[in-house]
Length: 183
Image 1 (cartoon, rainbow, N blue to C red):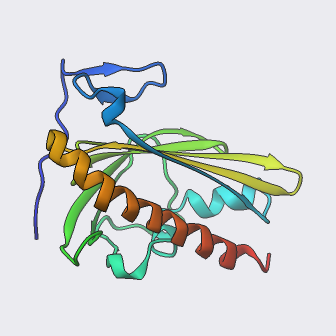
Image 2 (image 1 turned 30 degrees about the vertical axis):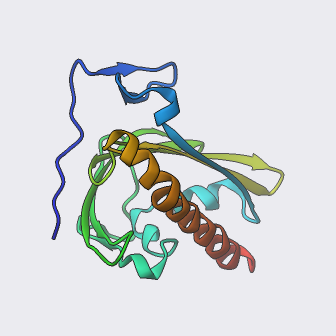
């Protein structure tokens, strides 16, 4: 199992207007982003119940990633600020990686943020937003990331990492549509 160091803390980090911890030497051009919106045919409280359970991450992650939560959770457990979730995942080439995320912000039932503490990225922040639209829920995922490796990292991102992240979120979109289409 490949173990990667935690993202560094300290003076190299600056707070942005969105309270992101972004490495100070990560120029905006090196910070990549995915923004995806999806309307779910379920009311906001039901969407929040689903997404605030760490166990449901298994349901919306592609099976080829061999996602496995290591932190013990029960079906009743919900996210909260400060929650650390440890898991293994094989995002590329079946190479298992240990990943650890921190739930850094929660405003029930409207949003939460998970940030990588240990994993393959130099920086990873995933913001989940939920808004009631009639009896449905509009969900917005905003993922920001950067890689190690300078120019080589940017090339790897362009041809490998970003396409894989888009595949993961395309799978998630389809899976959520299937899960909730009968609601």
